[in-house]
Length: 191
Figure 1 (cartoon, rainbow, N blue to C red):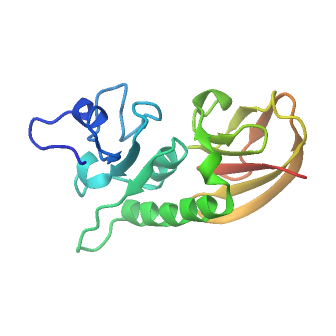
Figure 2: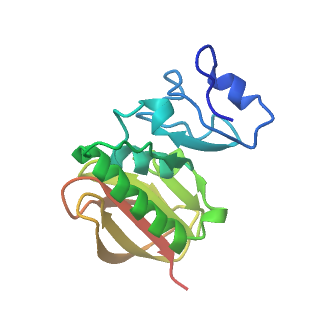
């Protein structure tokens, strides 16, 4: 069920019998454009640029924020030459698909409390995917995750992976992006 224009609300979608929904931007607590809501509903959310901006929004940051909040993205194509931000969204959708295929996505859930970035998909103790929207230092809480984790960075803007040194769980760990710009950090328990 998609947002009903005019007069619809996201609450109507949340309370509907639909299996999946496609909301509008929502209020400040939902904010599907800038800070997508991971826990507004238990339904499958298809975050569609057409319902959020029409043809004027949706970039790589939006894709990664949505994906690491457990949402599905849908990009409304336009038949005109693409602005750069649209190209970045398409590239990010491909990146997210690659990670979805290599992770055990079925058991991963969004958990804003595990990382200072607040964008994290996790199978606690086994696998984590964290999004950092700018260069810098951030923490990931691995306190309840004993063991050693492999570290892989994805440079979102350059679409390249950079291996990192393995890290031990069992505590809150600090990470620093090894390149400028947005990054995804993939941690996986080493057996």
